[in-house]
Each structure stands twice: as C-alpha cells, then as structure tokens.
Length: 73
Image 1: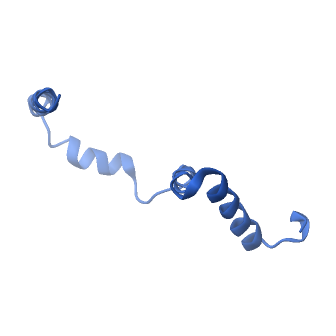
Image 2: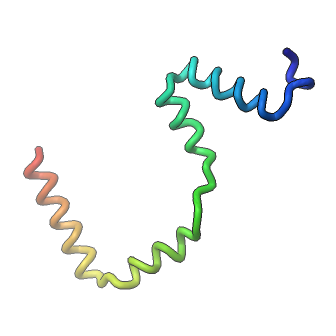
C-alpha cells in the first residue's frame, strides 16, 4: 500500500511493526522513547530538590556512592 493513501494510524502501526521486526521489541521501545516529550517542567522540578542541598550534602553523597561502588567491584 502506498503511503499517500494510508491514514496516519496505518503509517504509525506499520512503522511500529517495522521497528519491532528490525530492532526487536526492546530496541523499538528504546527508539520510540527518544521522541517522548515527557511531562512537567524539568528545570522547576530540579530546582525543588537541588535548592535544598548544600555543596557539603552533594559532596557527601558523591563520596558515599564512590565507597559503595568500590565495595561492589
């Protein structure tokens, strides 16, 4: 069927099927997720939790994660 006569839904369905066939279901999902707009305002959300942290809090968290990573290795 030529794409000129296909509906948007037909094109979307066919595209998803081709992606799933070529990339596998997981690859298709990862590909499609790249184009998701998401929700909310990331900058405002980020400030809500970052503004509560001091540089000492951040450095302590980094050190803790490094220690944990070394223990896992």
